[in-house]
Length: 310
Ligand code: APR
Image 1 (tube, helix red, strand yellow):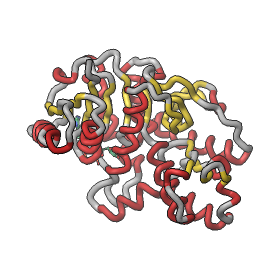
Image 2 (cartoon, rainbow, N blue to C red):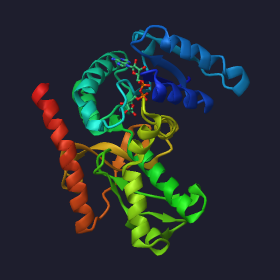
Image 3 (cartoon, protein in one colour):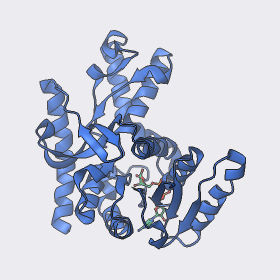
Image 4 (cartoon, protein in one colour):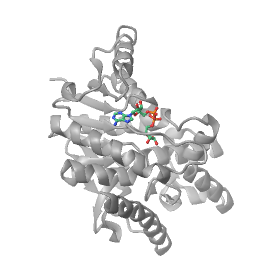
């Protein structure tokens, strides 16, 4: 039987997720959006690419959730993107309402699904989806680290003029300005990054990775990034559907790991058929641990705002 993925939000990130899932023939896709006609139109357009691209999956669009029934994965991209000068946190309350209603309806029809959250502010939206869905923690996962490391890897590869495929990087923490790119654990084909680049260069690349999202917003002016975010999301979708057990940085509910309790924060996890199958606890230096705590504190602040308004 074919796998089924629902993508809520047929905007830039959502439509590109659907495109990439279809292109890789991973699953049938149902796009859901509040705007009448948009998910149907984009769904049909994607379906009509099948004969040329050579995929047989079904892609459909809907304004309600009935056609999403029994999805294996629900990707939530619904919400409002950042505008220039706006932080991810400014989006908090507006997107909370969107994510709450989207999650509520999606899980009603797909009670056994795995939720991949993409809407920002990411870590707080994961918390909202976790509350609303009542799912176990392994089935609520946030897409942030794969994107943040992809950006960091891009900049490292550019700087060294080497293949991006050989560059590995670790980014932990919340998906915001306080994210923690871990230079010590990043490298090129096993060569530690610290042996390849001087401190000033490394600091510059870390800074650029931290502000990678804002850099794109500044260019686009009317929205935020979507090609890399959709690619990152679909790497997670693929690892789950194919039970590949990739180790990827994702937002996961921590219950004591890294000394963090009851918060979604980006950490390396194993993604397989059961969702998050393992959280890897890496030994951090006191400085790294302090940066992670600072990042978790920023997530905590947002979650407290949500708790007060809930
Ligand atoms: N239910 C379903 N869809 C909704 C809802 C809702 N309650 N509210 C809004 N939407 C839809 C919009 O109609 C729009 O089509 O969500 C879509 C969002 O698409 P874009 O505005 O193009 O935003 P996008 O760039 O895709 O970003 C979506 O992902 O990366 C994050 O920060 C980004 O939070 C933002 C999200």
